Length: 219
Image (cartoon, rainbow, N blue to C red; front, side):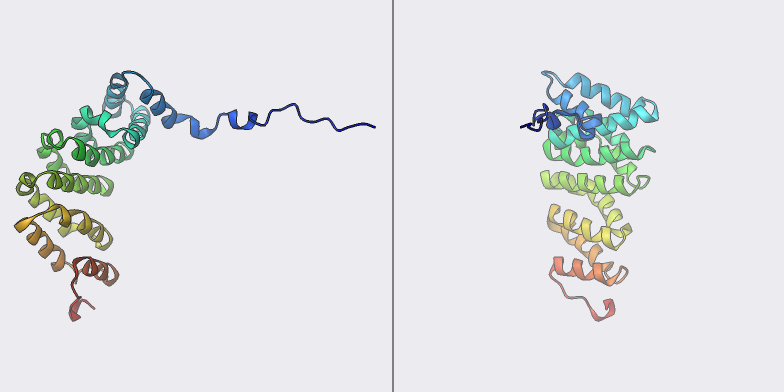
């Protein structure tokens, strides 16, 4: 009687095969995170992101994005680069900068505050992703200290006035809780004043968030 030969492959072999996920930016970031002193490599990627050829800049931005997701504190020294990168012509650099700045603002608000003039002047020229990152950054600073409110109220008012319905709903939930006192009241008034200018579905969601009823003219 003959018996079927069984495969000599071990069950674990399939798991050991490299996958696409293991390569690229995620693998590069993991390697950096496992180093004893990762800062020099992070600094190199920051430099490449801002000064390197477009393809290399994009790849470095992807690597830094992975680092930000795991240990945002490691990219704090790159805050000045992200402040410039948020209005870059390279969309991937913008995306990474928009992820980094709010995270750094929560960890080290004073470091971000040093870049405030650059960040405020970048708002109008930034793309939608950049604008979103900046609004989240400004809100994080206001949450950290009311001292930032006066300096940031004009740009936050500009943001709320210029946002479309969907974005206004998102930013209302971020900006209003971050503001206190008169700046909060003024920002709320800006939002309420726009409810008749945006699609009703978003106006209703904002009204629900604010705890108010839509007036007849909004319907």
